[in-house]
Amino acid sequence: MKTKEELRLYFENGDRPTQEDFWTWQDSYWHKDEKIDITKIAGLENGFPRWNDFHAEIDENGNATLAPLRVMNIFIKQGTLHIPAGFASGSGISNVFLADSVLTIGEEAFSSNQLQSLTISGSVTTINGRAFSSNLLETITIPANVKEIKEYAFAYNKLSSIYIVAGVSKIGPNAFNYNPGINTVILDNNTQYYSNSFDPNTRIIGGTLISES
Image (tube, rainbow, N blue to C red; front, side, top):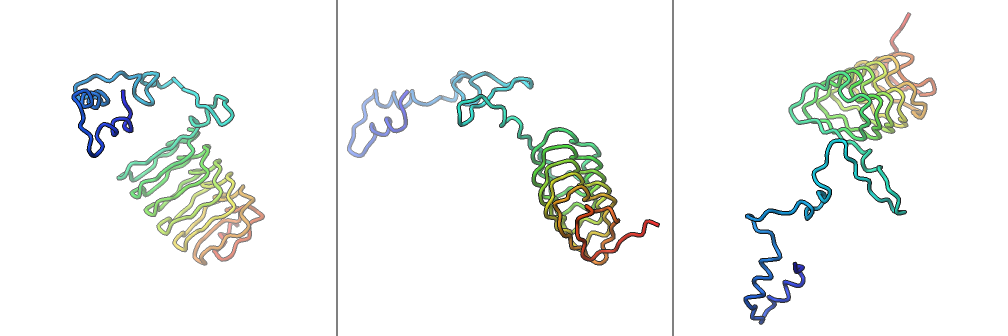
C-alpha cells in the first residue's frame, strides 16, 4: 500500500497518470464495502479490550508502566441535578467534571480519591459532609451560589489556598480542617463558621463565629 506522499507523485502538474497509477491509488484506501482486519486498526491490534484486560505502556526508560491506566476521569452529564451520597467514594478517580446543572453534592460523594484540582460548577448550592474529604486538592474556589459547606467537606486534603465568596452563609465543623497549609482565610462578615471549621493554624479574617456553648 502506497503512502500519500508516494501517491502525490503520480498526480503532479503535467503528469499523465496510467491505469496502474489509478489502481494503486484506489488500492491504498479501504472501500466502504470492504471488511477491515481488526489488527489493522490503531488501538485494536490486540482485539476489543475486556474489562479485566490491561495493556501496559512503555515509559521513557523502556520500562513497562501502568501509570496511564491509573488516571480516571468522571464526567457528570448535563441535566444532572444531584450527586448522591457515596457516588464515587474510594473509586480512585483523578478528575471530576461537574455539569453546570448540578445543585447539590451528596455526603462522601467524591471522598477518598486522588483529586488534585476541582472546579465546582456555579449552580451548586450545597456541599454536603465529607463530599471531597481525603483527596489531594491544593486549591479551591467556592462559587457564588453555594450557601452551605457542611462538616468535613474538604477535610484531609493538601489545600494551601481557598476562596470563599460572600454568598456562603454557613461553614460546618471541620469543613476545611486538617489542611495545615491554609495560612489565611477571608470571610464575609455574614458567613458563619465554627471554631474548628479550619485548621488551628489558619488565620480567619471576618466571618461570624458560631457559639458552641
